[in-house]
Amino acid sequence: MIEQLIQVGRQIVRAGIARGWAGSLSCRCQGKIVVTRSGADLDALTEMDFVHINPRGSQLQSRLPKPSSELGLHLGAYAADLDIKAVIHAHPPQAVGVGLLGRSLPALTPTFYRHLGASVPLLPYIAPTTENLKTAVALAFQSTTAVLLQNHGVVVVGQSASQALLRLTLLEEQAEIYLAALAAGNPRPLSEADMQALDEAWGVKRET
Image 1 (cartoon, one colour):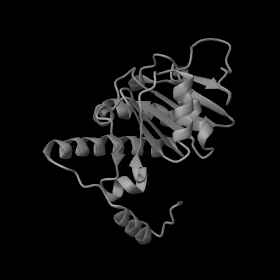
Image 2: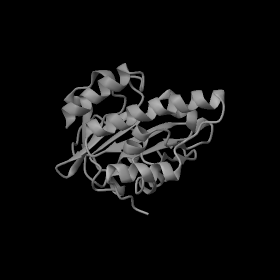
Image 3: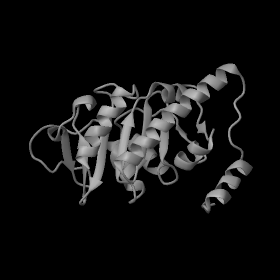
Image 4: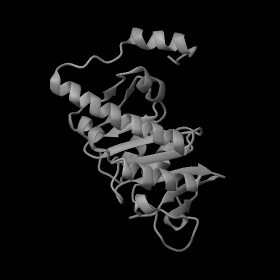
């Protein structure tokens, strides 16, 4: 999955979702977590830019490089759900803008709802790299696939690197639509009835 993360890094930088060094990627495989190193350029990753970590957060290699300073975000997400296999942390400008308004991002379209659920919740500002942020992320990912970090960025998860990338790309696209709609008036998100109708059409039973 490291090769997939290398491709993800390149794609999110070239799409303008992340700047080269601002963000971190990880995957969980074979009983360990592999995360980008501190200061890694996401647009030019190689296998040497990944650090192997055990589930408790200890580095498996005795030598440098050091893991991303936001390792705690990744560990918190993995602790929330064993099905999570990939985590992306980035600072996409449109999604950050929604967080600055103190808003969660509601489901605006059927595509949003299918991949991101009824909303992407907002975590009120918590200082980066702290244990408090790790704990808050772990709690959030018990019931969501993406979170907005106020005054900071986003965290998105998936059962694969490609799924996490899809969710991140969609999140930023929908955040841009939401901000544009807010500037023009009062956006209409999908209603509960709308989402129930989609569940019926797709043959999906939501947990309540």
